[in-house]
Amino acid sequence: MTTASVSRDAARLAELIRSSSRTVVLTGAGISVPSGIPDFRTPGKGLWEKVNPMEVAHIDVFRREPDRFWHFYGQRFSSLKDVQPNDAHRAVADLERRGLVRGVITQNIDRLHRAAGSQRVVEVHGSIEYCVCLDCRGRVHHDRIVEQVEAGLTGAPECEACISPLKPNVVLFGEMLPEDAMSEAYDLASEADLMIAIGSSLEVYPVASLPEVTLEAGGRLALVTQGRTPYDRRADVKLAGDVVQELSQVLQAI
Image 1: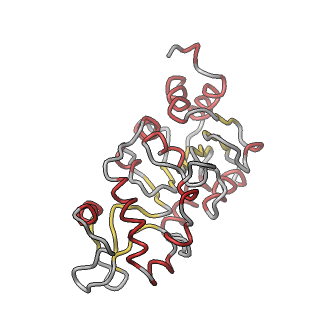
Image 2 (image 1 turned 60 degrees about the horizontal axis):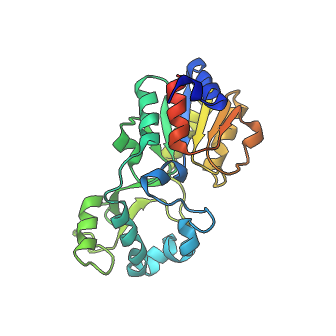
Image 3 (image 1 turned 180 degrees about the horizontal axis):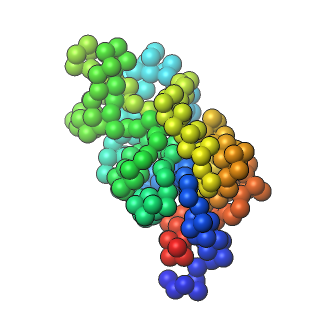
């Protein structure tokens, strides 16, 4: 890719990053799509197009029918086992290493930002890294759960200490977001002079309110995402192409 092939919008975002001292990245499912993980709401392709989340990913389903819950989540755990970060994740990590990004707030549970090398990652929806026991608060690593599922486990994995069903350490429908993570996310957003929202429709609250926090504090907003968002008219720049290609151009322009 030559310098001449860098789009005007990519060059504009690169300029915003260079001139900002407190840049924060906010990511949604779209940044992980190039890694082979479907997003949730794209018509015809999104994960929730195939199943009703209220029937498979709600905290009440887990409490009432943990085996049914794990019939869905066990498949999801196995599907994420070998997924690797893509160049969009690596671009964000590179910006942090170069001191151009203060931290990453992510709605994703897939651990790919950390795998790509990002250091300050605020996982506001939790992570599949561990499963937890709601009774004794014991934790079991993701790899152990996958081993059990692939060995033929048909019901919910159980805590070895108290034989209670284990729950993925992620925020299910019907649950509140973790207070500590949201507090850190709001702090980052309020201090940011630039927020870059990548791969998010910015429609799911309370995370969708974070760009507003930055804007109200006098910061700027940039979008790298396909499809419309409620913030399109308020962003300084929007890159609406393939997320990997767009961020590659931004890095080149920096």
